[in-house]
Amino acid sequence: MYENKISGSTVIIDGSNVALYGLKNSHQKKAVLNNILKVVNKLNELKASEIITICDANIRYLIDDTEKFNQMVANRKLIISPSGIKADTFILDYAREKNCLIVSNDKFRDYRHDNWIGKNIDNITLGFIFVGNDVMLEPVNGNKKLKKKTIEKKQSHWWHFFKNKQ
Image (cartoon, rainbow, N blue to C red; front, side, top):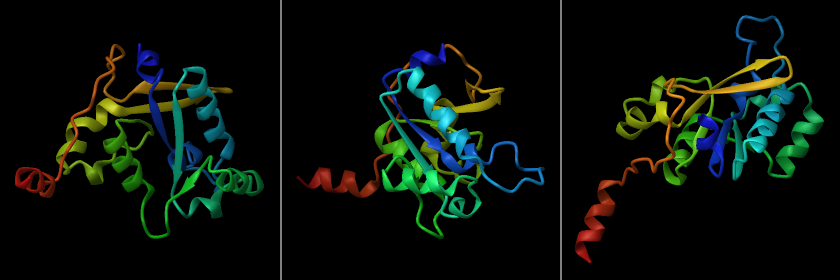
């Protein structure tokens, strides 16, 4: 099952996506920090080797528990994207560089034109729902028997040029 894929892996949480879960058509405008904490706890249960939470800059104005949120940022338990740069950019770049899984319900449609993302995003993304106090994770591509594998890494053209000159 997918749990085998998580065990020993680095997992990036799309913090804004998780904190804002279920609020799209809601009158409640506060993002829920506890949603992020529930996902972190679930990933710890599943023995993820490292958990990184990255959020958009505007989340600091939407979060319900600012004191705890600020503590997490200060303790580097949560990373805030610089203002004006979407967290998705950092999430996807880090996943590509470090061969990570991503927890998000985002389909990353704006980035699928990138060859690597188009080929790999559905295999490295875990969707989620909250059921009571529990979090359920599911591979986006629906294949529960995913094997742990090294994802195709993209190398830029300048690297090949440099490598061939040596």
